[in-house]
Amino acid sequence: MHNANDLLRDSIFSANANGVWRTDGSYFHATETRSVSPGCINVSPCWFQQGHEVSRISQDFCPDVSATLKSPHGLSIIKSMQRPSLLISAALRVMHPSLYWDPLRTTIEIGRWAYSTGRSEMYDRIRYWVSVFTGAAIMANRWSPAHRDPQCCPEWFDIMTCIGNYPNTHMKLPNLGIELVYDSGVMVAFCGRLVRHEVDVRSGDQWVWAWFMRDSVHNHFKIPCGQHSIYAQEDYAKYSKVEDISGSM
Image (cartoon, rainbow, N blue to C red; front, side):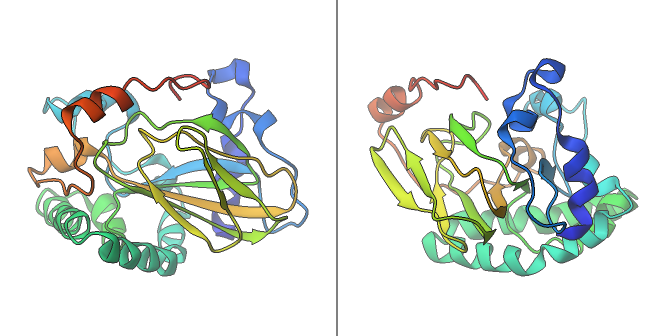
C-alpha cells in the first residue's frame, strides 16, 4: 500500500477544519518507518458521495469513482489490494453465502453499466476490484474512539483486519461487553451500525482495512441486498437507539 501514502498523508486535517474525528490529526501517531504515512482514506470503484446518499431514492445523481481512485495511483492501489480483497471475500462467503453472492452480482452489474455507458474511468477500476464489498476504508496509525458507523445496514457485517508491526492490542465492543485480541492478521466481522467499537493503539506501524457495503449502490442497480442477520422488530428498535458517545460519526 505504499502507493497510497501520499493520499493518506493529505487526508489528515485539524478537528477545527472539518469537524470529523476520522481525519483529525490528533487521532494519529507518528510513523516509526518510512513505509507508512498516517492517514485515513475511502476506496471505492463505485459509490455515492456521502452528501449524495439520498440517491438511494433518487436518480438525480449517479454513482462515481471515489476521489482516491481518480488519482494517478488509483489503479495501482486497487491492484495492491487484490490479495487481501480475495481473502476477505472468501471469509464472507464462509460466514454467510447470501451476503456474498448478492453483492457479487452488484459488482458484475457495475462493470456492465460502466462499460455500456462509457464510464471508462469506473470500468478500468472495477475490472481489478475483486472484493464483493463496494468499498474499503484504509487507515494507517490511527486509534479509534468508541463509535458506530451509521451508514451501514443493520443486517450486514463489516469486516476489519489489521496488519503491521505494533504492540499487542485489543478491540473493545462496549455494548457487547467484550474485548478481542487484535493482533496483526486478525479478522473481525460485526455490524458497525449497531455495535460500538474502539481500538486504542498509539505506537508501532499498522494498516487497517475496514470493508463495507453501501445500500444506495445496491438499490441503484436494483440488486437485492444479502441479509446476514435478521432481527426481531423489538430488537431492531432497541439497538437502533443505542447512543454513541463519540457522536454520529
